[in-house]
Image (tube, rainbow, N blue to C red; front, side, top):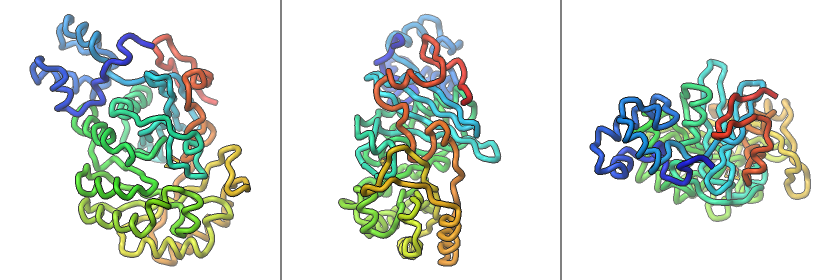
Length: 370
Ligand code: SF4
């Protein structure tokens, strides 16, 4: 573990918390530090307009980023996945996706593991370890940026259910939007499996982010079997909460459909989805399931939907008047695609078995190809 590990990581603090923590230093010092973080400083020693003695003092009391990069993988399609080992030895994953126009999106984790148990998700199969704190969340962004440069969008769609960790998510968003990254909230999406109290809380108390619901099917009975969250959060209550969010935030919501071959691509799934979307300003995003070895649903192995199933579902949805997009598959070769996160997760030993050599400081020298 590097010196300073376990000390508070400044990059993940909202500006006012950072200023309070640094007191009695004058407020302009906190502004200088935030400015250095926004410019990609790796250590306090990089902050050349701070006196040497202050840099040394800061290095003793704080770290800049939480966790250490212990693994890095690059898919031939350009997707990068990092394993970041936290102070308790648990490894979480963060992914950087690049679209056809070269825009980069950081997919960040909010929990170590996940308690939700969606049957199609590798992270859900790991079970729940703990919530991440704001520094552990925000630091994933800074680590990705350090390796790949500017990032256009952030999605909280990595490991965990963000709305079960809303307090720390808020602090991380405050750090990223008001502190070290000056990120626009309009370029941040939070994805939920459908936690009604969390959606309501977000609606009433902000921040105003883009919201995505991982719906998967609007057939309530099937959804209960695929996503246990449905039992305590029935779809009518989820829809009502989304409506409230739209009223307050004025934002279109995305309904994400992880398509499971032979399970939720039936004509009745299209009809149920159209019914669910009625009255919402919503776009549908089709996400063909990404294979994870050994995952089963009620005794049968899960399979990817074939091209015909996807095309038929899409055509039905469009005929029903829905706006449909399809997510391109990225990061599958490194277990970095939607639903696949968790191959590096767990203890640090596991993470260190990955393919990227790491320096003694825990930084990857480079992100390797396959
Ligand atoms: S899909 Fe999301 S909410 Fe469901 S188990 Fe996976 S990480 Fe958790």
